Length: 500
Image (tube, rainbow, N blue to C red; front, side, top):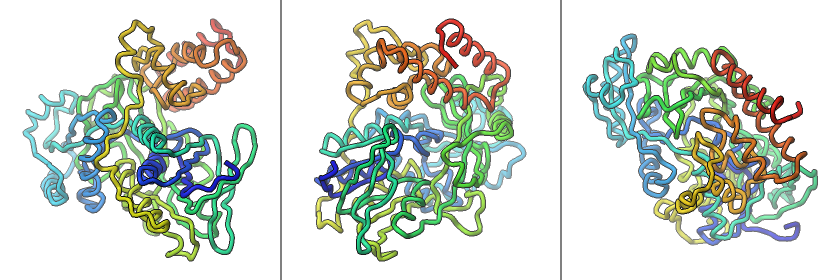
């Protein structure tokens, strides 16, 4: 790798980087995708898993709304294994402006989004978890999507078309010469070893960290670090996505996902120094619980199992301190045109929902530079499955994670085919430990498969994994959640001998 030159080096292993790697590889380019941690380390792994219909942005950002509904239809077609087609409601509560509903429906239809106002009685039949006092309901084609599965599907397809991937390697500097970016110097974050990788074009797909990558080339992308906090509830309360029908605000959406549901989100500007160590405050958790239970009262009696936060990769606007007004539109920068720096392209802004379009725009720029005339086919080519095939799950293999129904064959598949080497990597590839118990027993079972008789490696991995689980439980450590955390600590420290 020290001596090979690629057509394109992509920095960032979130959904945008993975999608760009897939697009470029399918067009016949030699691709290297690098990520400083594991796939989905940033905003991709820290959102509510909503497959936007675009309705959320219809009034305030119609361009983003149209992009969302177009990509919504594409993803349902090419990645059905990643999408739960729940549909969604936008509902009005008695204290909300009822006149906003008409404006909302009109804006949705203008953006090409199917929006149907439904009688409140009928809405309560379709979604019994709704507040019975709702005064209006609009049905839209929202859905939920698994961001981990979607990202790994893109990575797998890229690799099937010749791309190489390298996780746990951080770009510490860009290699430049005569105003041209020639590649990057990478550091293995586990060993400290450094290597140089050369490429004809380098794509900066690093999300909120893209500002730092651009600075390495001597240019600037002025980004807004807008933190969003979310809560995970212990079981799937709602059948459909539930939104509040008002201008985007805090705590106005609940998304069902697998066996849980996620309520979000907040938006607050944070210093760049905090983006690698985000923490949800008890005040943010209380706000989200209050606002989400106004939409679905039963959430007040549903155990909160986790709080987490991500940072939206938004290009900053001077008059928008929180990021609520900043467009979720795509920003693709050819730095040769913008700054006179050849060989560097940045793709940022947007959202998970529009990752495929973002990747297409970035790949178009790369191909134009390299004289590649191949057309993009990612809107029609189906994404591959990343799970173990269903037949493996009918051979009587014991369950490792009951909450997410991950059996031993699924764990082995993640290790042997998807490259999982730790419990954290296994979680992002299978959802192990993401259900109601948050890894209470499945972590030990999985660690035994991962590490065999290496007791020290097993202990270290369990400590890291359980510490990360506790980080998400700490802001909501009351009642049953605190009792569950104490019980887990007792199991691992007193029964299984895990050292602190």
